[in-house]
Image 1 (cartoon, rainbow, N blue to C red):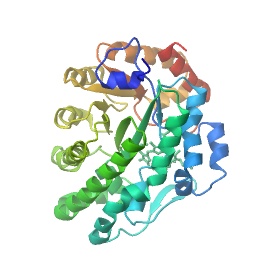
Image 2: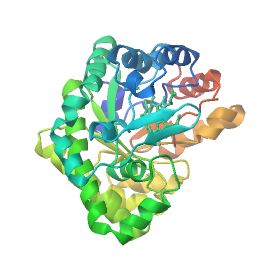
Image 3: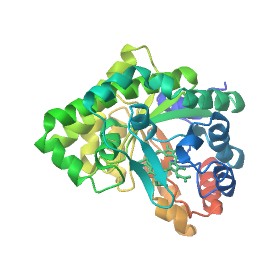
Image 4: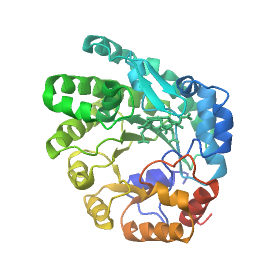
Length: 340
Ligand code: CP3
């Protein structure tokens, strides 16, 4: 009876309304997050403080009737656990130190779950505090997206990473494999600690040729999910190949994810075709429209529910909540979807 709506939807059940959660639902648009965050200026230290990370996870759950809580952490914890320096420059974003040798990275794989055990503790704390009818989501960055940061040392246009994928395929494939091996272990640890859904953020699937998309996105996702299932982890997975455009359909077809998150550009028909493959879709409200608000926001929410309401649909954004989004707009969308 208490089975969370989000889990019922991921199991293919049709519910009276779609479940809703929002990418980046915890974060800077919330004044209480900014206040908590100010107590630990080092962002990585904040992510690895289970008490504070659990509090950040729960802040949006107290304010809004959301159906899912996503653990507060970051995709760049994995490179750090593999021995690469990671830090955040205030107002600028992530910075990574020199990429360690392959052998050094490989030597860290077995210890990744242990090194990131604070994230497991955050999950346990949140699961204890959260009502049983609300789902808890864990996540990791997908191998290619994390590798772009490891190679480029910061947010970038990924030209160097994509060039390396053509010029030095063996090295890139070996690095992706290190990330596959580290990431499934990390996700298995999260499932054990209480995560009921696992999200794979492939934020930089955009701009890849069909060949590169297959090699850098589809194959690593397949191996990662195979490894998880072989390890006995049955937790549903939502894959988010952001910016994949028309290649999303091939992704949905070839990767054994239960849910496919669609980005802002996804058409009504694309979503319906993915639903027709037996996949649950998630998305795809534009974060810019969420920030803009007004009657156009209500109209778009209604249209998304209508166009995808004939198949399983998880209501969400097409990318994360922007920092300068008014809290009242977030309230407006959640009320429109949930009726509360
Ligand atoms: O509510 C949630 O979504 C949970 C927490 C979460 C964060 N990052 C916290 C965060 C999640 C799921 C992420 C994922 C993440 N991190 C992604 C994939 C999703 C996406 O947005 O595409 C990526 C690419 C990152 C890497 C990252 N982390 C960047 C590029 C930045 C700097 C830019 C920015 O948004 O500030 C971060 C920092 C970060 N991660 C913040 C938060 C709340 C802001 C840092 C702060 O509070 O000072």
